[in-house]
Length: 584
Ligand code: UTP
Ligand code: MG
Image (tube, rainbow, N blue to C red; front, side):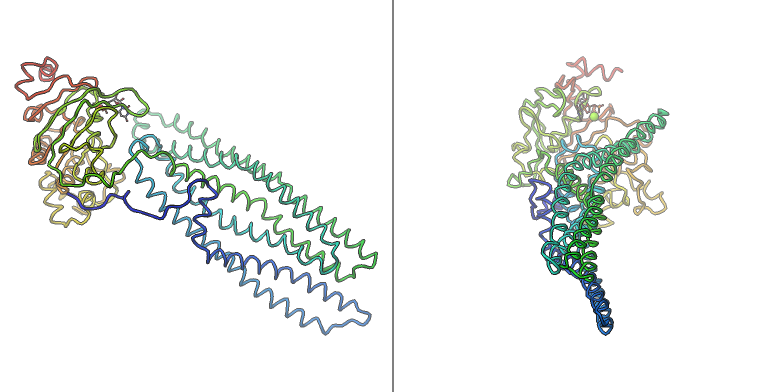
């Protein structure tokens, strides 16, 4: 048996998953050091930006004295130069901190999501489109990164730029607080409204993108079928419709952004502030340098105004993405690993007791199935297409769980087994064999990553695969194309058998319903399968009469029920349904 732990047993710190904002915050607060650097950088940058208009105002006053005092000019200029260099350093700290935070979170969230996805049950995966999952795992995770850099980086930066005029204006006259305070209040009120309007639009942007992606990945996955049916145009049409939905959502987002009143607000603030300062000047409460300094302070508001149109969109998009990632991770997970369950070595006795089963979204597939296999025996499962053969064997390793009755392995209910122990001792070769885009030897050694080349070759020999592997230029190092497309059905099947030889499971399940191959290959596969069945309990779904014949037990499934059961001789006498298979 393989000793490699199942991926889903990996434990990671659990982040707060009750809401998108809380979740993002619980990730971010893992990095207090960076957050403090970001805050210091942002505050310092804004404070030193405010120094410029203040010093310029002072310079004007020095020049406007009855006898112009030019001696202050050089020190002032040097001071401005020095502070701005320092400001550059602080700005770097702020940007660097935000970028670092964004990248770290992106990596952490990706890890968290990957672990969560591998831990999900098959029920989850068979209902969730791969393209949509991919969109969430790539683009949405990226959006969360962008939410921090530039998003939150600029939001924090803007916040301090709004605060600075409020802190500095009373230096000239307390009444000058009116304009920056009024700006801040209206700005925040408008912002809250803006974000509320934006939220459903951002959700729509992310969702339509996910849908476009899942459709695209499906038609690329099935491109052979699409071309075979000459449906390229129809698929393109569907894609165009989806792409148009994404475009419309983005346009609606742009439209909302364009309506945000920040620029109007900024214009009004500049005009009102200047008028106010001039009135105070007329009243003799301010001098020229102070008016100029104050005007410079108000000009600082253009940074929050300018960034507001897109920085908040970025945050809104990031939150939409965080919601989508969370939704996927939080979606009900029926998989019960049962780590405390039975983890002993398996003998390989299998018993079905009144098993009933239906897919979560469908009608009953299996009813009242009962049989028992002693360790080491071979069972052939036969029946028409759609009878429920594949569904039946998938219940043994808990790919799906029974709806009624129970399945016992070595007398223990499969649900009472430790899931990793159960699955690592049962090898399943599926109807459509999946190969990874890795080398042949990696594919064979998949269930047992530490295997040596000699062990891999021995397994390939036993599976009758060695010969054809040797015909490739790179032999065992040949990389198989995406989804194993460069191999024939018969070759794939033998690779899968080699995989099973290497993991040496107690129970082998072989779903071999659909393979029509030439007789030479047929013969090889035949031999490989009988070798694989030696010394282990084997459930064999097959149409090959020779294989059915030598099985210890044959189960005929008809419409989800056991129609007949016994060995070849018995069934030929007693079962009309069975005899019919051989007559055809
Ligand atoms: P099976 O896939 O168990 O049939 O589906 P089978 O006997 O192995 O058929 P072949 O020989 O490979 O073609 C049994 C029933 O379960 C439904 C199918 O529609 C079928 O009626 N089914 C199968 C689902 O509802 N969901 C699934 O994910 C798979
Ligand atoms: Mg099947």
